Length: 306
Image (cartoon, rainbow, N blue to C red; front, side):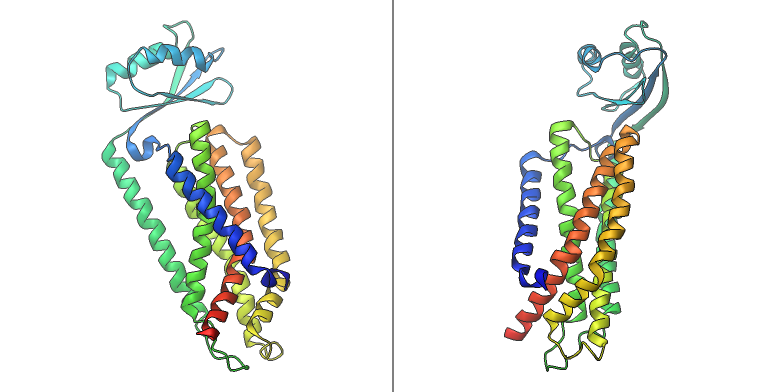
């Protein structure tokens, strides 16, 4: 009952973190990658020694191709991101990267994405997130349709659709905080918003809601149980948390261990992806225990006062 007793403190903490994340988004903005704004991406590997990025950046600036991002990969390679390039500009870029032939290199991959493709990806990403959110509300509302009956104490139960709405509120919390972290990484370390970012957000949505549903399901079972049906709603929620929080934390901890291994030992291109998922898993577990359940109790108390 400790969590339910101090529910307002935990809710305030969550609100503060979300507001901080939203504020950072408005202050710093996001560094949009070529997947959404269009541009060119080239992967190169040097034969012997990889030049320092400082010396390459100085030479690349003389090409007047706009901002060019050099991202080290492997031991001898770079991922080079720039605006869309024509054939002559592409040739000049490779010549400069090879330092006029002084360092032999091989271009292993080259992709060019137009602005129209970027806009289409943006639209599809937004549609996917909205549809998943609506599907979660409908699923939870249907699954918990029998828990909104009056309790044995004569109190009206929390409506099933409010379980779904609270789940969405916690999902917004779980997504907003990793996005805030990504904004900081984008501002200070040049992290770019790309398709992996969208995959991370959708993955966080799926992983986070599973924890919340586990605890909600335990609440539903205790509401139906004849032994616990006669105690008040806050005590039922507290009992449900005691019965399920160890499982939730243990499951999330094992996933976080794998994600941390990917972050420290995986390729450079997936580091920010792994870090976002790790943050999402941590705060997803936090929200299912310290936010979703206290919000249920607050809603029930508000209904009774009303």
